[in-house]
Amino acid sequence: MFSGIQPTADSFHIGNYLGALRQWVALQETHDTVYCVVDLHAITVPQQPADLRRRTRVAAAQLFAAGLDPDRSIVFVQSHVPEHAELAWVLSCITGFGEASRMVQFKDKSAKSGAEAASVGLFTYPILQAADILLYDTDQVPVGEDQRQHLELTRDLAQRFNHRFGQTFVVPGPYILPDVAKITDLQDPSIKMSKSASAPQGIIDVLEDPGSVRRKIMRAVTDTDGEVRADEEAKPGVTNLLRIYSALAGVPVAELETRYAGAGYGTFKKELAEIVVDALAPVRERTEKLLANETELDRMLATGAAKAHALAGPTFARVRDKVGFLPAS
Ligand code: TYM
Image 1 (cartoon, rainbow, N blue to C red):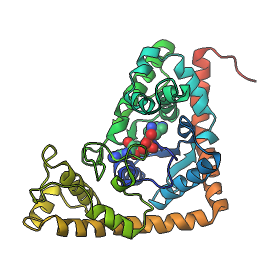
Image 2 (image 1 turned 135 degrees about the horizontal axis):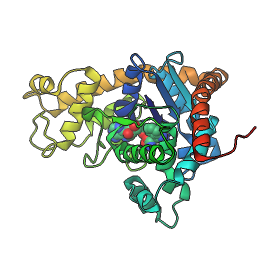
Image 3 (image 1 turned 90 degrees about the vertical axis):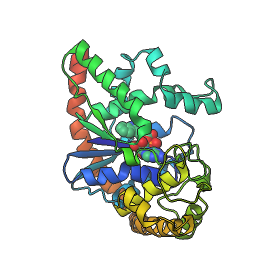
Image 4 (image 1 turned 45 degrees about the vertical axis):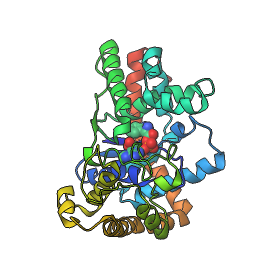
């Protein structure tokens, strides 16, 4: 299992947490797991160096705080393992320009500043993501729904490389849990909760203070019929809240519908708010503790990078040989 997350905010949000992180933690019990804070991806849009440095540590601390165990999972920072950028270059040379142009995330992100202003790095972003995944002989990639197209490109590139140069890469598949794959914005349930697209009122951060979490949930958009019932089309706001509740409390949506029949949104939201606050509080506290000792956190990341490098090095050596690069020594 391999997955990655960008260090582009001062906290992950509950979409990241439910769509990805919780699966990452669960999967370390049963699989070989490798997880990466993708700082190379972060700089595809402008970042202040001091912010990037701080957010990379905050991201790593949240991963450990959420339950990743450095003895069971490899947790590292992407730029510490140079093979990611090296393999991305090789893969970019077998990617069609038209193929890369069809990636919707690039279209969305570049639409904001205009395609002319977007960086070439933003354009080739999915190729770097493919390199991340293929370096670790990954079978499955636990992610949210928004990453599906990038994983299809990854599969295409792995198959193309294998076809052209002989068996080299494992062809990976997505690991996406439909119930939590797209947590939506609390104010606009037609869009996914997103650090770049959502207004602060639409996002719940993992590190957010409890008062603010409660306020945002109480103000979350619902509808006028007053029934706590899931219906993606007619009641997207309530459906999203039910999904969050169900995932965090481990109670099926149908059971919640029965429990809150006739109760009204106020009661439902109040109880949901406490569930969210209780789920996030320990993560926030552990994150603070980990951040209080940067030396130790950096040491954990250095250990993770050494383990990642031990896996990525041999994969890239295989690639070098297949492509026809002379041995370096
Ligand atoms: P990123 O940093 O945007 O998001 C991290 C993970 O959180 C998931 N996610 C969500 N899941 C459910 N509901 C939401 N509203 C929501 N918002 C985000 C994302 O699907 C993701 O799993 N390109 C990746 C980072 C990456 C990567 C990789 C992932 C780089 N290399 C290799 C997998 C494998 C990204 O930007 O994720």
